[in-house]
Image (cartoon, rainbow, N blue to C red; front, side, top):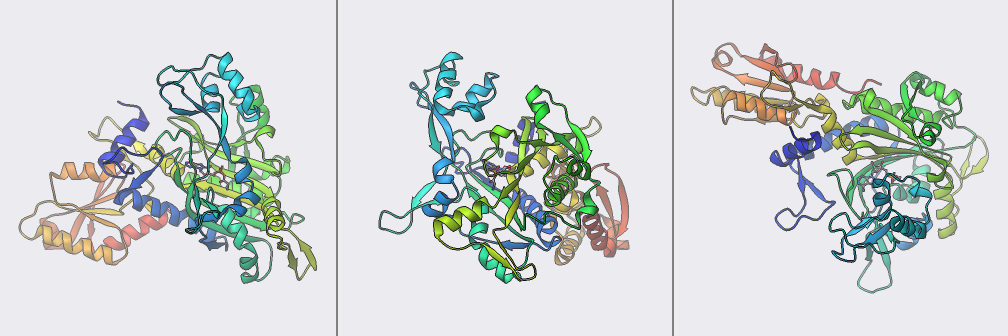
Length: 499
Ligand code: GAP
């Protein structure tokens, strides 16, 4: 069988889960469109994230502008520093990331290399164009933001936002007042971000247009405690610490969020709480404990203002891949925007009679990387079944149920349609499918991860019962059609993250 990611990619294209954008022209690398199945799964992942990280937590959700004037991104450091090292082939003119080419030759430490040094290393290692073997240019910095101009008159530069976070910092003073002028305060945003990646690759992993789900948790740095951390301190996590990385080993520290905090590995309870919540959320999405680790950023990778950074990495068919960054951003962003805008962004806490610039802890999720990780984790192939399938958690499956009339005659199809409509009216996502053999229809439903198939037959007409088949074990049971909606609602509900 093809590699796992190739097979998933095949299913994705065949079932229009996601497809390269502008496919009928030459597709533009780094952009993907979602068909009905992919759009439904994405919507449900977002709904679950919103429930776990916003609603349940009493945090606040905002939606801010996608285009930001240059001054904002100067303050955040993106205009000056948000770049990757670029090299170009003198022969075929293709462009590559210098650090990726160097790392592919087994040489590490590119994060700390000056850009001129990268050029030298490329020469020393005799690295040539991976496509045509041509000579590569000097490495130069390439800013990753998409630039535009606001309005018809020139001279008003702006950029498509490279992260959703900046909009949150800009709207912070208003939300602070709206939410009662108190800390801590969590503000989240879900939406598109744009990065003009030099070499987008690996399907959904490195994109030019992607979605982030980010939470900025503002707090008084003298109060990093969080009462509800008690509930999550026993959550097991695996940490890939700096020391292990420096030794060049893959040694992981298996511990709990509470122990990691007690040992001083994590900076405070808020950070430890969101790290544990991220672990639980990922496991609830069907990604197993053994495929997860939190990698501690090395000292040389950390932004100067950061007090702690852990990335949740997932073991994918591509190797370990960062999919979430949890960062203690201190007061850097608010302080920088205060300086640039000349507005006072400090807050006054009435009860404590205290003025301060809040600190921020940020869990930042990449939706597409999570989506892909879920697809890989849910992929199943067994000898006993002729087809492969996606064992998606029920809560994020594109449809809760497929309604399949056994045949079209004698009113069976009509009965199926009637049932599908009833279930839809209860708010369930239903696929109605009457074409092809029942085996083919089971295969199609399994392939896009529908957990339940309901077959309508003569007994449904006579007795108002139908056969429900569960995707993962193929087991079937007979259920009264009047009970079906409740049965499916319960299945979706039971599958939600228990927190
Ligand atoms: N506000 C912090 C921030 O944006 P980041 O580590 O640059 O931090 C956070 O991005 C997450 O966004 C990453 O962990 C990843 O999941 C996702 N992400 C970043 N660049 C991406 C890209 N080019 N394609 C797909 N996802 C990306």
